[in-house]
Image (cartoon, rainbow, N blue to C red; front, side, top):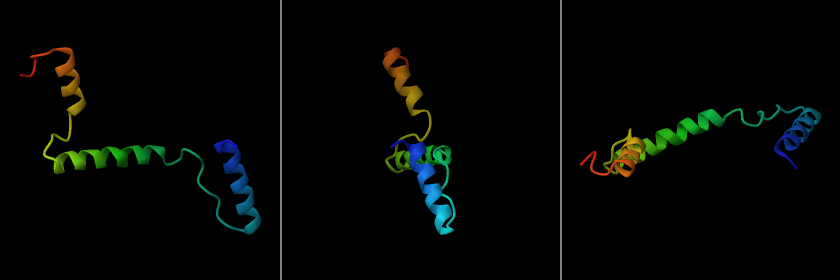
Length: 69
């Protein structure tokens, strides 16, 4: 069963029982991505690493050895 079919089935059952419908699939994805990003930044700060720019610095180090020292 696909996600869309499950959503339609849950919506139908909710209407039958007079309950609120579930949120549409993918509706909260952007918020989840933001929360994950914030959590990773928080964990980096606790570990004593820079919270931002880590990916760019790593790529620069891999692509141009000796560029950042």
